[in-house]
Length: 396
Image (tube, rainbow, N blue to C red; front, side, top):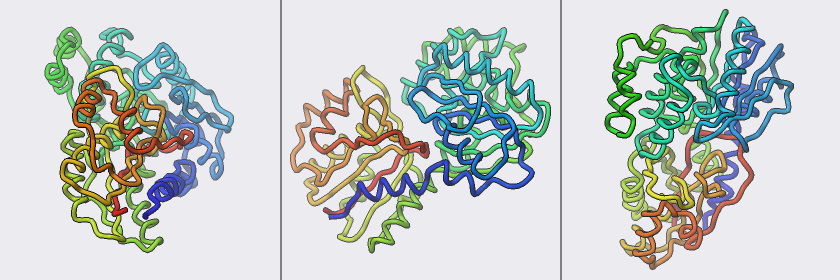
């Protein structure tokens, strides 16, 4: 049987943000550092190992790794804006206003853990309510971030536009390939979207009429359209994650088959596509996929993208009478939604799955307990990574 868990864990180790950021640091980069997001602490520590730092500011979500390097630290919320998120935003702007050249280390989770409302147009309460509506809607993260940018005083390039000197940006990406401006809602990168685009997204989501109406007013400033980061470098993204898994599989004598693109479809469509491809797997083959399927939150149960995809995959595979499959659905940051686990693994997909129980769990957004009962929860410490999810399928 292919040891999917060890491949998953070694992949996370090879893609650790603290390790990979060192390879992109060059002489002459700014010595004042701003790091935001889930990986802010480990990114700063990685930079400090190879680069002299003058002053540093770190904003990290609660529960994620804090840096060992000396810095000004702010701990904000995630995935919802909290009072701590806005306090972190105020500290960030004060740090930037007091310094010149900046090296910005940007990772996913930065959208929620640090924020400043675009005043006088919006209040903190506007951002809290709108963000909660967006994250529960199931729309792609890129569309969520378009709205976030247009309500914020620091997103959509506005942080870099307010800097007094040169800005260099290093991105550890949890979004689509080539969409670096979406990571943490692009605080240092130019944004081509408009207030009208953001208002149209809110119209589709519903329940945010007052905010959409404000966005349509002519006196509301647009995000920054000009080039504001002197240099922008990608540290890693989900392709880095799946490529590392493929290298490990090959080193272990397996034939690695990579999914042709990141999976970003609805979670039910993703499960169906994976089952269809898994049916053709042969022994010694490992199917490797990654991405971030969209999930609509319907209830208050325990679960996340990985546990819901795992549950849907198991149900679809059982219905298709597929046997002899092992599978792993794991987050790269070690946290799958509110499940308390990193994901779900199956040594063997069950031959029978109670369809009624599955449908109830999905209605309640309570995928984790049932998925963990059918398979096994992956329990690891926070990984310090944030490169979307990794899915591994093999013949057991």
